[in-house]
Image 1 (cartoon, rainbow, N blue to C red):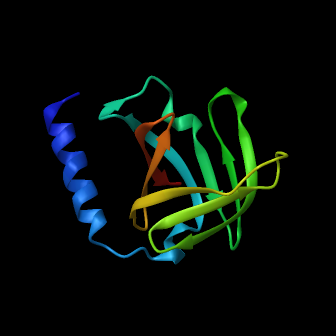
Image 2: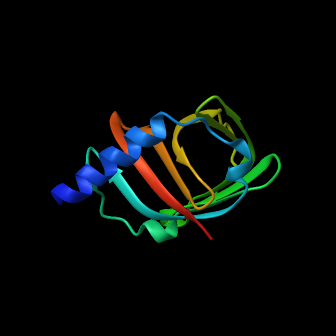
Image 3: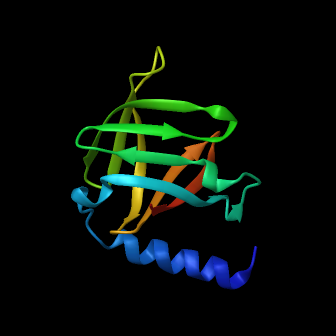
Length: 122
């Protein structure tokens, strides 16, 4: 991975960690621009990852034609979602690293690996 990209990502995460989350900014439609795992971009098309948030509901679509929808809430710096579209779904939590009027960075754990999803508002 490019060293300047790593430095940029580090600064982005550092600045975002110091900021409170403004819950009202999450409403709207978001599209992926990068997926970083263990410090490196993963080999998927991030533009296929889309999520929209309304008052209490969300709709999510991703690679391999995966879809989910349901309810969400934000508590502190965590986004909690419960999929009501697919059966036997449990509540999931991801960390909101950054949320501004036009960008969203989510930190999650995928199979024991740290993953960041970087999105922009549409």
